[in-house]
Amino acid sequence: MRRSIRLPLIVLAVGLLALLLLAAAGQHYRLFERGWFNLKAWWQPTEQGIGLDQYRAVLQGIPVEGLDDDVSALTYDPDRNSLFTVTNQRSELIELSLDGRILRRVPLTGFGDPEAVEYVSTGSYVITDEREQRLIRVRLNDSTRFLDAKDAEQLTLGIGLNGNKGFEGLAYDAVGKRLFVAKERDPMLIYEVHGFPHDNPEQPFAVHVVQDQKRDSRLFVRDLSSLQFDERSGHLLALSDESKLVVELDTKGKPLSTMSLRKGFQGLEQSVPQAEGIAMDDAGTIYLVSEPNLFYVFKKPTEQ
Image (cartoon, rainbow, N blue to C red; front, side, top):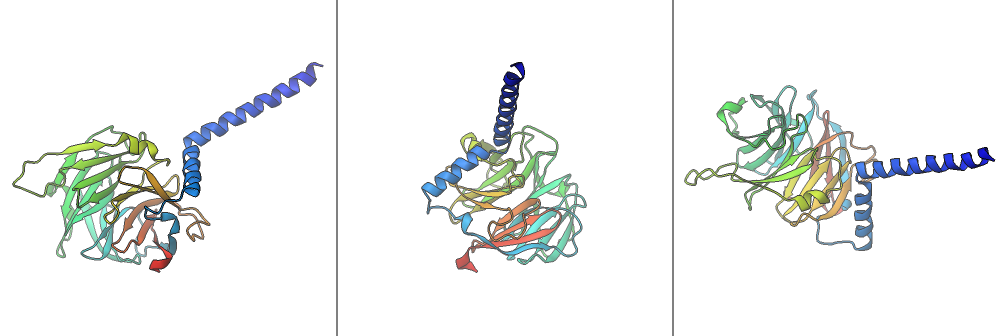
């Protein structure tokens, strides 16, 4: 009799433990929030967003020849019609063609742990030092052979210093003069920095940092690897390596659409192993880099 009672109790305990583990995993990976978003998107599809789910890979997993270091971040330069990325072991600023070929390499000195780069204006870029949470504004022209951080305009924020989980991504709103800065995780945040870079010498240097907690709480991803601001729509794209996802946020921070980076989605033959940088050109084409040196291009069918 005791054995017959004990067995159902053991089964019940195991079942409860499994449910608790499942709930913990769902919370850890933000599966419930993501599932709820997917359900709402299916039930009430929106036509106001970029439509990330419509993008398809036209180039995928192409190795960047001549690069044996980990790439981190990506930005599009409309003046040069090219892309820029950074490496953080042997620190370099690297210019890429739109099909992933190396066009130029510029050594970086004194940048610590460069993790992101963002085009802000002609010949002007911001590079982050992840560990020290520095924003470093550099200027580049055709004769530039190297860049030294001590010669550049710098801003150290030092908000919630957390080792190697600091400033991971950048995006710039040229109209609103806002620099979006992504903190990778623990906690995962997106700051809006106003007043840096400082472009008007006639005005006093004044920096204002804004945080949108409501927007950040809506992000159903595990981490932030990179950001991209779409000037046409005013929407922000957030790339997550751990969630293998790109999320589109509207002007109020509400998620509108997603692009999966897993095998079988968006025409991908294999999952993107470790997505680290995202950029978008004026035509809406999306470019992606993954560690250590893989290159991807995504387009909507009408753009191909």
